[in-house]
Amino acid sequence: MRPRATILLKLLLAFAVPSLALFAIFGYVALEVTRQDLDAELGTRLEAVAASASTHVRGKYLVELGPGDEEERGYQNVVQKLRAVSEVTGARLYVFDRGFTSRADSAAGVAIGTRYYQAELDRVELERVFAGGTAASVTFTDAEGRRVKAGYAPVHASETEPEIVLAIGAEAPAAYFRRLDDLRDSLLLWGAMLTAVVLAATFLAALLITRPVRTLAAAATRIGQGDLERPIGLGGSDELGVLAQTMETMRAQLAERDARTQQMLAGIAHEVRNPLAGIQLYAGILRDELAGDERAAHAAKIDREVGYLERVVREFLDYARRPAPELGPVDAAALVREVAELLGGDADATGLEVEVDVPDAPLALAADAGQLRRALLNLGKNAIQAATEVGERGKAVRLAARADGAGVELSVWNRGPVITAETSGRLFQPFFTTREKGTGLGLAFVAEIVRAHGGEVSVTSDAGETTFRVKLPARGS
Image (cartoon, rainbow, N blue to C red):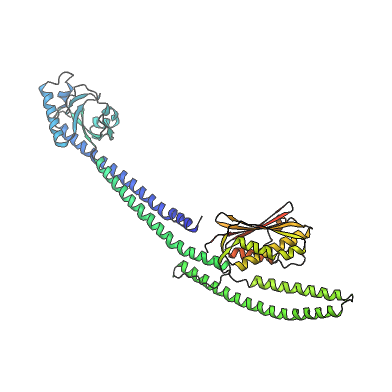
C-alpha cells in the first residue's frame, strides 16, 4: 500500500471513525432521552386529564347500568361530560370496570359492556389505579395504526363515597413522535454535515502529511541511488521539517565524505598505476631481452599479473566513482545489437557465437546508454567465460530484449555451470566471487547501475542454463 493510503487509513481509524461514532452515540442517546422525557410528559398529562374527568363521574350510578341502558338520561349526561372534556383536551375518555368492560365512552358507538383489550394489557398499571393512584400505559399502536398512550385515574362511587368502583382512561395520540421525527431528521442532517467536515479534514490532514513524506521518500531514494548533489528541498519547523533538516545534514555529510573518498581513490590510483606501468614496461623489456631463454616465461607471467592488478585497480575505481546516470532516449534493441558486436571478439576467440533476440521495432527507454552498455558487456563477458569453462562451442550465449508490461526486460543467457541457490543469493554483493582471480565487483557494479535506473536484476540457473534478467521501467524520454 502506498504511504498516502496507509496514513489516510490510520487517520480515518484514529480520528474520523471515533468522532463519527461518538456523534452517532450522542444522537442515539439524545433521541432516546428526548423520547423518554416526552413520553413521560404525555403520560403525566393524560393522568391529569383522567383525574380531572373522574370528578365529573359518579361511579356508583355507572356500575348499576348494563348493556342496553345507553339511552338512560344519566348515562347520556356522563357521556356528554366526557365529550366536553375530550373536546378541550383532545383525548378520548372512557370509563371501565375491573373486568375491563366499558361503562361510558366519549367515542360514538361504544356500547356498555364493550371489552377494552388494550386496558387489559395494562393490568399491572391498573392495579395501582384501583388502589387509589394514577398510572400511564406504555405507548402502543391502535387499530388505525396511530401511536397512542393512555393515562388512568380511579373513579369513586360518589362525592361522598370514596370507594373506588371504576377507572377512567384518557387516551390520546402520541403527537410528540412528530417532534422526535424532526429531531431525528435534524440529527441526521448534522451528522451528514459532520461526516463531510471530518472526512474533508482527514483528507486534508493526510495530504499535508503525505506530501512532505513523499518528498522525503523521494529524497531518500535519490540518496540511496548515489545522488548526493540535489538538496532535500523541504523546509518547515514541525517534526517533518526537523526530519528534513536532519536528512539534509546527512546528505551534505555523505556528499563531503564521498568527495573525499573519490579524491583518495584517485590519489591511490595515481600512486599505484605509476609503479605498475613501470613494472609492466620493464617486464616487457626483460621478456624481449630473454627471448628464446626459458626465463622469458617468468617475465611473461610478471606481465600477466601486472595486467591483472591494473584491471583490479580499474574495477575498484569504476565501482567507487560511478556517477549518477544521465538519462536520455535509448533504443534497447539497438543497444543489445551493439553489445553483441562488442562481444564478438571474445566469443570468436573461444569458438562461441553470440545470438541476438530483439524485436524489429525500437524498444524505447530513458537510460544512461554508457552505463547500461557497460552492465550488459559485463554480463555478456561473464556468460562467455561461463560457457568456455565447460567447453561449450557454437550458440551458447544469447542476448535478448523484449517489452515487459510497462517496461523493458534485457536478458543474457548462456550454457554453463549451474549457479546454486545459495550462491545466486550473494552474486550481486560487493567482493563476493567464486573465481580464483576475481574482484567480486563486476556483478555488484551491474546491480548498482540497474538500481540507479529504477530497475531490478535477477538470475535463474537450472539444467546447465543460466539467465540474467534486467527489468527497467519504460520512463518517458
